[in-house]
Image 1 (tube, helix red, strand yellow):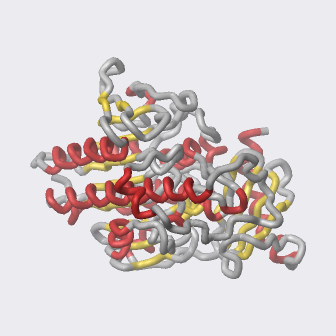
Image 2 (image 1 turned 60 degrees about the horizontal axis):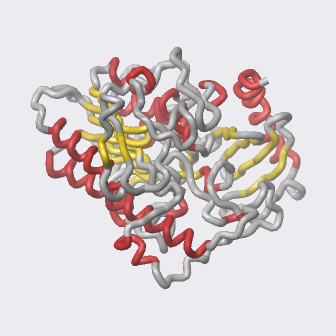
Image 3 (image 1 turned 90 degrees about the horizontal axis):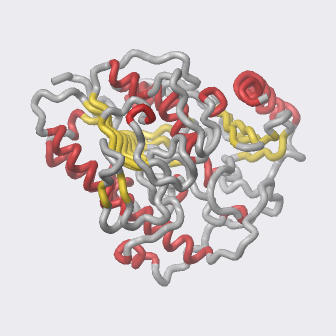
Length: 424
C-alpha cells in the first residue's frame, strides 16, 4: 500500500460561507463542519472565481479559468485535450472515485447516465448529469445506462450511503491504491425540500437578520415575490442536513482507520444570495454568491489554523497535487497554498484573484473588490470588505484614483489575456 495520503473532497452545491457556523453564522447549525474545521485549517476568504455550477466544476477539474478551459456556463462540456485532476491523480497511482452530481455538459435539468468518456478520468463513478427536480427519490447511474440506482428518500442520505459503502470497501482492501474520492451533493441547491427533522429547529425563528438590500444595486434585483423567511428556513435546514451527512463520512473514516492518512476537504461550488441585495440564486460576485466555505484536515495539515488571505477555486487543483506529493500539471492558472495549510508559509495577501461570468469580470485584492463590465473593464462597483463586509456602500465615486488603478490595471491585463482571447 502506498504511503501517499488519500483524499476525500466533499462539495455540496450552492452553500455560501456566510451561511455556516464556520463562516460566522450564529443561526445556521453546522456543528460537524465547525468541529472538523478546528481539527485542520479554515480558509476564511475562499472564492469561487465563477460562481455557477458548471464553471466551478470546470475550474476544479482543469485548474483553469472558465475562459481558459471553455467551460463558461452551465451545459458546457469538458474538452478532450485538457488534462484533468483525475488524470493527474491516476498518473500518481491513485484510485479515482466520483459520487454525485456531475453537471458538466448536457442540458439543464437533465437526469441521465454519464458515459465513461465524459467522466473526466474518474473510473469509479456513481452519479448523474445535471440535477433532480427536487431532492427526493432521485436516481444515479454507475456502469449501465439502463440500470439506474434508485435513491429512496432524501437524495443527500442516498448519496452519503453510496459514499460510505465505497469508503468501507476501500478500507477493507489490504492491497489498495491510495484513493481520491469526490462527493458532490446537490443540496442545498434550491428547490429545497428538507426533511422535517432538519426544518424543525428553524421553525418560529426570525431568520431575517442580515442586510437584504443595497441602495445602489448593480445587478437586477429579484422581481418576484418570495417569502424570505420560508426560503431561509428551507435553505438552512438543507445545510444542516448536509452537515449531518458530512459527519457520517467523517465517522466512517474514524471507524475504518482511514482518518490518519486521509486529507479531507469541505467546500462548495458557489454560494447563495439568500435575499441579500434583493437577490436570490448565484452568479454574482457579491460575497454571498462568490465566497464559499473551505476547510482542510489531514496528515501534515496544521491543527486549528486559519488562512485570512484570499484563495480561490483555481488554486485547488495545484494545492491537492502538492499536498499528495504528485507531479504538477501545466499550465494551470492557480497557485498551490499547500505550505500555508501545513503552517510553514503564508498566503500572499496582495495576490489578485479574478472573477468572470456572463457580462461581468471582477477582482479581489486584499480587502478591495472591484466589479467591472466584461467588454471593456469599465468599473461598476468598488467595495472595501474590511469596513463594509456586507458590501452596502459602493465606493467607486469616492475612492482615490490610485486605489481604483491598482485594481483595474491587473483586471484589464488579465481580462485581455484570458477572457478576451477566448470570447472575442
